[in-house]
Image (cartoon, rainbow, N blue to C red; front, side, top):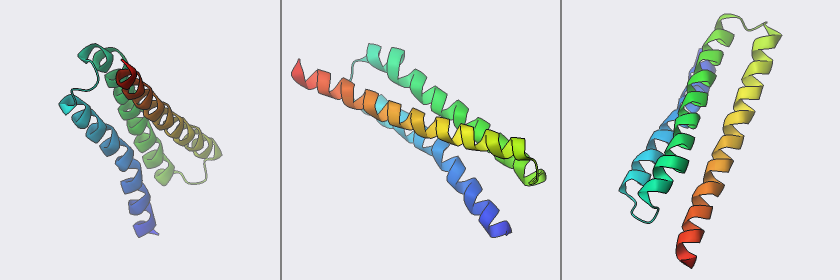
Length: 103
């Protein structure tokens, strides 16, 4: 049981690691304009990190009160939100690269 909880926690922190890695890669990339990075991509990455932090906090609360149905629903909603945000971020990066290729 404890191993499962730790594995889930590690998977959740992986979302934050993903956001950090994406940010580091974008800093090195010269394909996307600095303006697009600052106004579009980096704010999205910050949102991913914030949602990841929220998910971690909710999961820790859930571990302390596993019977709380409201916490479970909040966890599900936040997980859905981060998955949607990752997909949106992926599409935005693709759009910026595609736009750059057609210029």
